[in-house]
Length: 233
Length: 182
Image (tube, rainbow over all chains, first blue to last red; front, side, top):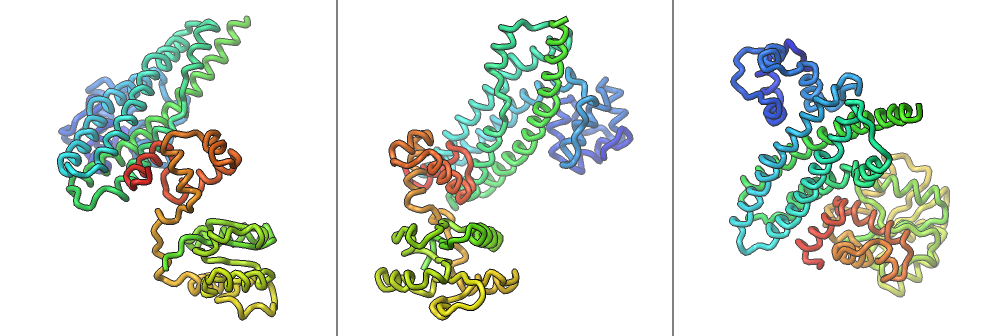
């Protein structure tokens, strides 16, 4: 397990994929011999929260308890990861697909992959926008003790698409198809980089969705139940 | 010869399910399962490895003669002694141990046919359904077009996804485009 006393450099060296997670906390490499606790102290970050995130991304059998996570901090973190996906990950995948297209101008397969990815990108972007526009504000309001009227909640639940399975499966399908059907003459470094980026994103997005499904949604239900109880009083 | 289908014909549900599970573990998933010989589809049997109850041996003999199917691709399923044993390439006994069973399957699936092309695993019907899925038709619409039940379409779709390792409709469309199925 990663602890407050663990050196941040050891954490990064143990799992380079955590650089993207750390970037969302505004932590960059170059922290010398500093421990996680020290870095958090310097940057004003809740060490317990950061540790819960880092351990989730590092150990498959670890997941924090709902009561150990501050939902408002989690919302802020999820928003930052959305921004990272939108500004870094998805454009990165797109530029690798464009590279494949340039590499194989006479082949249709990269063009088909581009079209598939564009649809996927639109879908995941729409999903993230929904969360930022509806899910997170509703949760914040409920946490602040604000009541929601019946019409507001009806509108919210009508739009709540809590099923991440579809976007996850689509990403897995893209990897499967790339491995099986990318023309053999495609530049192998680009194909490797694309597959690697997709795999990291797949794992990252899985954890991201787990935080939403296992922490935010139960929290929302719990708050709605309390709020309904108060309304009845 | 590249074997595309694996068919089980046996009256016992337990034998059908059990043997299907064994073949799944062996790495050669069963494509069609029938309870009676009469339910079989000759077109499918013609290009299949068939594991049939030895009780159907008479009917199988007729099939050999009519369709010219080699008896080399037949396995019999038996329990205890049975006179028809010599008609089959191998006889799978329901009392066989794992080791015996797997060594018999090795005879039935010679190494050349083990490395099958997953794509060609799709039956004609599955390819037909894949085309419609890839064009965006819903299960209900496919059922109406092909005059089959929605439940049958869903079963075919599950089999298609299992064989191709692709789960989403848009993934299937991409597969179909790349492989020029549509």
